[in-house]
Image (cartoon, rainbow, N blue to C red; front, side, top):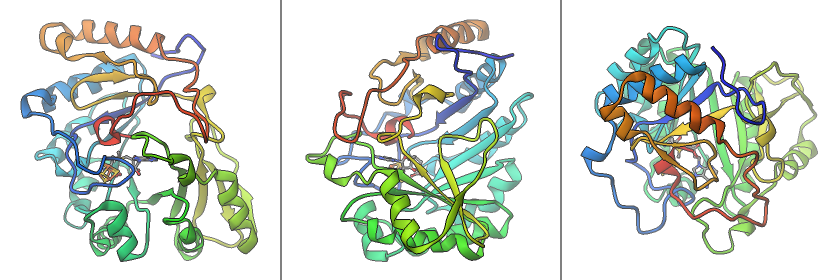
Length: 325
Ligand code: SAM
Ligand code: SF4
């Protein structure tokens, strides 16, 4: 089964959020005063999330990324992942985490059938890490990364680059790829909550690459189909890779293959479109085929492009933790 939207894009990737809760409060993800937490009754049950995953796979989804909030803070996440991993036809089950709980959970995640982890890490300096996350302890994340490595997960680190905050650490992150097969992705800051003067924080991906080129010789990696939006490179002689993800300066909407479902059951076909469709009513009262029919029609309405640049955006502000990144 395959599903293609109105613009001929094959949709095969679902980002499924399992919670809006988080054990960090990253400055770029949540507003200063925090956000109102969803009531338990408003969050989809694991059974409902499984139905959505199964119906998505029946429609043509091949890869599911579990996200949040912080997915590892939801109780019962491991048995849920075990169930997802057994869905026939699902080719990739992957998860994005801030790494805080990985030390305790890496082994169980591996055993449950999670194939890959993306770990978000924006600074290697304890004080800057604490400032960005408003409460985080860097050593816990570093221990978590070691635990994930030890159980055999390939390590991918996502760093949101912010001018004047952590852009002086680009070399340090790149150096992590020299001796170990670590993948580092530098991501452009996106103005989701639209803090004042957000434009000043954006470091376009090309500037990151120019900086790297001053210190390291590197060459592009030729990628296969469906390898995601990163432009990837290998520093000469390095074991790992570096890459840039440029949602603003070089948007990849033409190749976008993804849909998102929030933990409340709201389906979004574009992170920056305010259009959402509530799947909960049909999940509660309908048959599986109704869920599938509704999802199919929402996919058909996926917009061509988000229309955002390094200096302009027109969406209503939102909290990334509510949608899942
Ligand atoms: N809590 C998990 C984590 O941090 O990895 C998963 C959810 S988090 C919302 C998913 C991703 O969104 C993280 O990699 C985070 O860095 C990214 N993100 C959140 N706000 C962002 C922003 N304003 N610009 C760019 N990336 C952002
Ligand atoms: Fe939590 Fe992830 Fe948002 Fe940071 S980016 S506040 S870790 S959900």
